[in-house]
Length: 613
Image 1: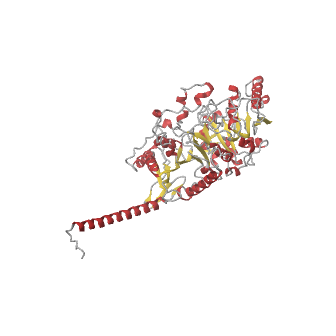
Image 2: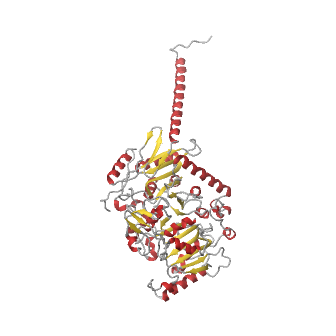
Image 3: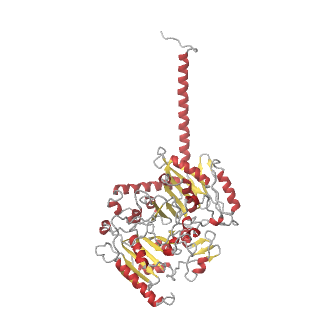
């Protein structure tokens, strides 16, 4: 007979305790499931962004993302309210207004410490960690969202780039004109007084600019980048660069217009691009001493030109017999310079294909089979793609066998055709490349549908991908003419994929995100960061990277960050301290993937008009 357990029995209490434990466990599990489902439902909400209002909707109401286009009084209230979102996160202060156009690695004062020979002082010279600014770069008073493309090609707000110097210095050449509250860019240039369009038509009479054969171009000493601006409608994407020098803000103007450009110079270091990157390179009175230092600068152009690529020169000494008086140089001087350029081009086995008016054009050979009378070939052990703080070398990078037998398909077919660097087996497999292309197509669709629905609307023109890999994200967006992508490949990454990016007909640059990027503040509308913070977790501070992202991002610009959820939680807290509003989303594959997507918007605020450096 079973023994009756009374209420006073110890065993009775053990059974009751077990039942209570099971009940508590079940209730806890149900609560966790409920909170998870609520969180997943909230994270499926959408972000609504336009040129004046940025907000996102959740099941708990809407946060205010209203932009306030006013002076410092309103900015102060935005600062106060944003810091209140997370009291435990100390807000990063605003820098003095004197830093409004601060370029940390091309700082004018710092540059004076370096050698002026070969213009080394105008190269990148970044501050040590102890001297990095721990403050946010302010926008100038009256800052407005730039004009939308294509209107931005011709107009920019004066308040955004308040410099009239070029309107005086280049008045005759029609670079830029000041009209009330804005600048107008007529499309003129030093060597194209009839405008960039007519100048490009002259080139088109010699080279095939519209059939997709030429896709990527390099403009050395670009001015306000009108050459690159007018090549865009011909399907050619140009990387324009110029130093930060006495031509105040030329690269800043270019990016404000929505044209790819960066601060750079040909001095002692290789350009930060891979070998065999560009289909065409251009110099229009760029003032580069092409034959100096044993032709080192032409050798560098040879390195970055694709096999069969073209080099275009206009301005001194081309057509010197007509212009020698206006250039205020002697016939002997100009004739000697032209002869030296001709001889150097021959030593590189370049073929001169035309000299017409103010234009001279050479073509690089498709192979080096018959090239033996010029500079020596570089050692086979040297990687011609290495270009981050790498000194220029007076040797020719011999063309690899893959390029001796293959020509690139025409644009846009080359975007999805397996690049030779992949098919040769030096980087990845063709299957991996195709899978990556498909993956980023799916991810871009997810962004447009769920994370950032206005991605394709023209709201964002200048886009940066901080860790571009094979260029999949840019490829997924590239057929939209309203946007372009600066693909960045971290120089220390195990796979040097920037050459693949260029073979696809895209553009980009090597960089180290422990340092500042070679651009002005407020020059990008959207920044994409795929696992950047995991990649740099043992190299530099997460906060420093985010402060640099804030420097180059326009007010009301957006950021998409992909990473592991624990990393993104840390990123999100720092975003609050730099006055960004942010929202976490699930991975496109669903909520059970530990990688998440964090979207953020930089709030609008400006500096104080009476602040000085």
